[in-house]
Length: 242
Image (cartoon, helix red, strand yellow):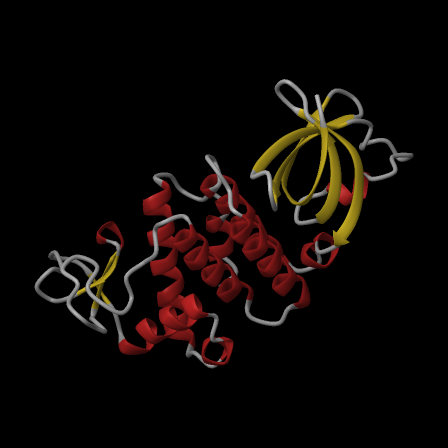
């Protein structure tokens, strides 16, 4: 059974026995990987701190029958410590890695890995509002998974927009003819913010009014959770930090 190396983001960990840990990793070239890190909970472990959630590492793994085995780990991005100091960054990061875990159940792509690394780096630096970083990540990650929200034309009939209604079940913004009764009304500044989050236009995102940011966050959360078919539990904690 061969060994292999890859760059990974640590999504989550579980205790195993007295000193070991099971780590779930999103890798750059091998998709999502579950592996055993032996002895990492001992104080003498050489790489225990490098395999904590939100950390980015270059690892060598031994391919096992059910779980791979971590043989080496070198830190590439120590984002976990800085994220953990701020509750808003910490809860946003948890929602991001939970969504990444769900979105990459089948086959991950290098773009998904790079997107998550970029999001965690932005959170650790505090460059932008934590919720905005999370919203932008969710929109782009959904797009990479084939669920790109329609923001410039009607998601149902294709009529050119922008439009004044947003329906997660239909795939994004819809025209007045296609909007079911009770659909969420989309204010122009909220629609502009959603497009800016999708495109990574951070000057527009940072200047957005608070009411537009709050409305956009609610729509992004509804859209992501609808298409993932079950809730992102960490989002409930993020909501409380707004």
